[in-house]
Each structure stands twice: as C-alpha cells, then as structure tokens.
Image (cartoon, rainbow, N blue to C red):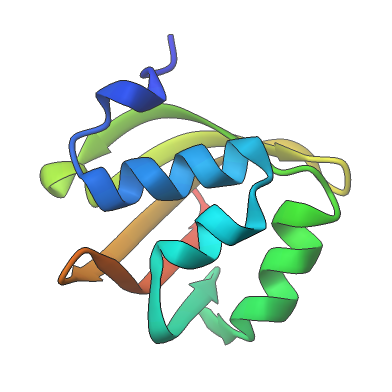
Length: 107
C-alpha cells in the first residue's frame, strides 16, 4: 500500500514527489538548490538531461512504499513510459529547504 504523498515526512521531499507525479517542471525545479546534482545507479548524471528523459518526457510517477531517515530516503515503485515499473530507492540531501543532491537506483 503506497504512502500518500501528503503524508511524507520531509516537506521538501514531499514537494519533489508531488511535482514529479504532477509532471510540473516549474514546481520540480523550485525544490532544487542552485547547482543541484544527482546520480542514477551510482553514476553522476546531468540533472536537466536525466529529468527530461526519465521524468518529464516519459511521464514518470512515484508510488512511495516506505520512507526512512526523516523522510529523506524513500523506496518507491517508479514507472515511466520508457522503462515501465520498477522498485527504486531515492535519497535526498536537503539544505535550507532545497535539494542539493539526490540519488536514485534500483532497490
């Protein structure tokens, strides 16, 4: 049973997941600190390129299964039009209410 997005503990991570699921690029970008970075399966990626390909143009969606680390670590069933659905892990570094780095990969 997924956790309702409105019940996620960390407000910045909650805003991130809400923006991903709404395909709201402006709201998504508002969750990120200037110069934010990300990694996928342990490899640093270009954040703008990756999010365009894996979230926005492919209709990405997160159903959060669990959270830990005060809401800054998630396990989610992630799906998009490119890869279908897979169990993924997400970790977030947040500073002053903005995401400075996030990592994702298969769980």
